Length: 261
Ligand SMILES: O=C(CO)COP(=O)(O)O
View (spheres, rainbow, N blue to C red):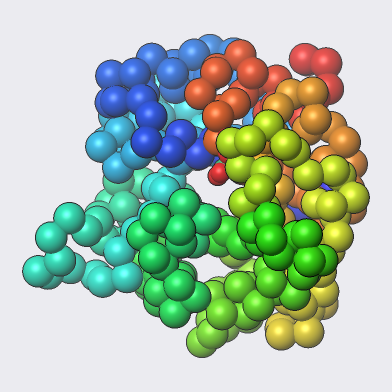
């Protein structure tokens, strides 16, 4: 964590919590988190599409400092694309973020680097901040190819993306073998790839742009391992799956494993 970059803790709810449960869960977070917490870290939730309107109503009505976004978006801006949700629709719902290229979308919905790239461009067309996910599976890790693999995914996703656009991007390094498995990467593992991603950004764009980009780690993050991960110089937060569904645990993670204020 660098003091120049404000930490971001984002809860990816995946396909959990209906819109009524989303309201109750967001209210719990709002009740537990205070200004001091939000001053220390940005906090975001990434609910299913069907929950976004409810979360927006709550956040707007109660002037909450919780940010929110989607877990995916369409590469198209509108029209005859049954089942798709456009960036324009998400922007209209007040979303800050659009998660793109999560390994579950790459794996189960066959999204390759080309699809991820056009989705990143779609997010920028609608002033959404991409949370761009990269990360290797177990065989690549066992062969020692994690840096090359993750950097190649980054390069694929950023084709035609300008320096001005990339300055606002959020990257998430999520090694697939650590997602939902309870097997968290070591702080050194997280730093190795997050540091390499920042270096590549500096080469592709420039050092100032790279220095400003927030890079998250994701994969079995819990309140008892967040502090070690956050202590790494190139890790600026976490993308939290399972533990984000437990309000008390997520609040502790948002406090970065430090004792509550
Ligand atoms: O995929 C993840 C967040 O996007 C991580 O999931 P877990 O925290 O459940 O391992």
